[in-house]
Image (tube, rainbow, N blue to C red; front, side, top):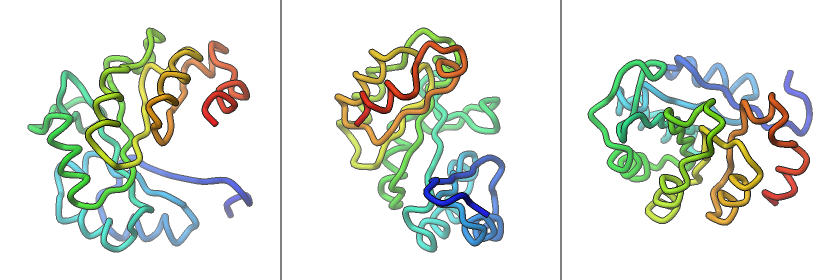
Length: 168
């Protein structure tokens, strides 16, 4: 059972409506679709039509294209073409990871997130390379929906309490 007050989301390998339903029925607040959002438009549309904002899409960007299958394959979609398609389908939340920045501790792709925030009305979550408080401040100034902090938290480069304050 989900602890009170926590927002819970799950993703990875979700390819069927039965799986989405199982997670939603179990109390998940959001289900993230990745490869399936790229490869199975009918499934994505059905999930969005059925569960609305409880469906998010993870867009892993590699060399300007959306990558699939754990970043091992490159799709035919450019980042912006894919995002446009997601917005037209009705996806409300897009988690966008710049694969080249992920875990590198060299800063986030500020130009990418600026362009995404200017071109699309979806809730955009920045992921990949968020490694300094300056990154947090910059992303906050873009009015993004959120940012994922990974390695920078574990190494102590970013203090979570300070990051939350800056992001408010």
